[in-house]
Length: 113
Image 1 (spheres, one colour):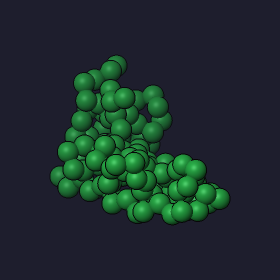
Image 2 (cartoon, rainbow, N blue to C red):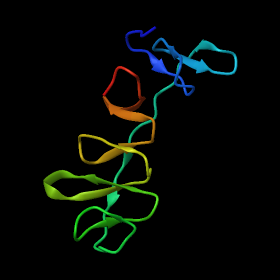
Image 3 (tube, rainbow, N blue to C red):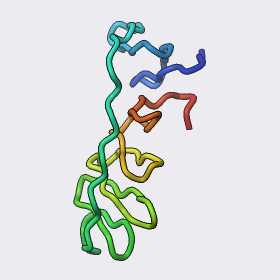
Image 4 (cartoon, helix red, strand yellow):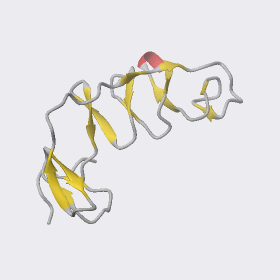
């Protein structure tokens, strides 16, 4: 049953309320221990190597295993996470399975596009 602000479990069949984590093996939701969410990682400058494994545009590229993120004023930055998400500030990114939100990386939820 969909729940507001729910967190999807890795089995893609269940979800838990916000503030809980999925224990797929036990088929239960466990209260998350209070902790600070991870901070977004700063982007590294894209290089002028169009033949690099991850092209950003015709003139800039990022090393293999990283992701290109559009930066301020038409610049490019490299996110150290290949499947990461680029933050709207154009200066940071978050690991796969999370999005930038209010200066931290928050887990992806079923109700967040």
